[in-house]
Image (cartoon, rainbow, N blue to C red; front, side, top):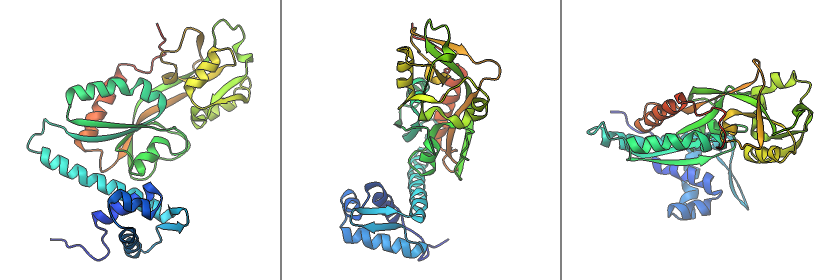
Length: 305
């Protein structure tokens, strides 16, 4: 039987690394774990010695992960989650029909509003033992995929195929393509002459080639925090916007939506998970519901009644 070595990190050491990263300091981590500060410091020093790298920068204001620390903490989160899954699935082996346990989901705003509610409703109806825990993040930079890679979520509903490569150790699969459309205040006769309203999460990396070829699109004069604010500003006559379909589900009658033609840009929405969690019962259950809901066309250009 394989034996542990002096270089192996134990689960309690992994929990200490995660706690220090999450709380931002040794003292706060000690309080969260019910340990003394000296015990936390000793544990971190031991982990650094085993790994052979400094994991945290210590300072007056606390402790901040080094690049090596960020990698270590991400792997620590994923390993600890696998230990939870190991226990849950081993206990459930005698009852394969019963899928139980927590499921950490991360997604971006428009998917949380329009895609996730019917998915969770179906999931709870079929598997009442699953406990979904949902976080909403901005889909900029590493976005939802980065949260999964860092071990903060089991599965992410994310935009795929952007300028940033998928983080290592993740698997992804598409659910649907959502088209972009031109949106403006109802009744305006020359919408392309209006100023542009935009927001950081509009995923320019997915549309940059198309965008650059459109000489009628001006530089944004209004930049909002999210797509809901953009839609509100457009509805009030403050400009036009180019928005993806999920953001336009339930759009009010005060705006008009115009197709951008056969060469319109699209954005691929899918899910990402880790290679080790892809086969877990809770993740597979959610994926089934995501696919079933996507097939029903949740990203159509719907409107309020």
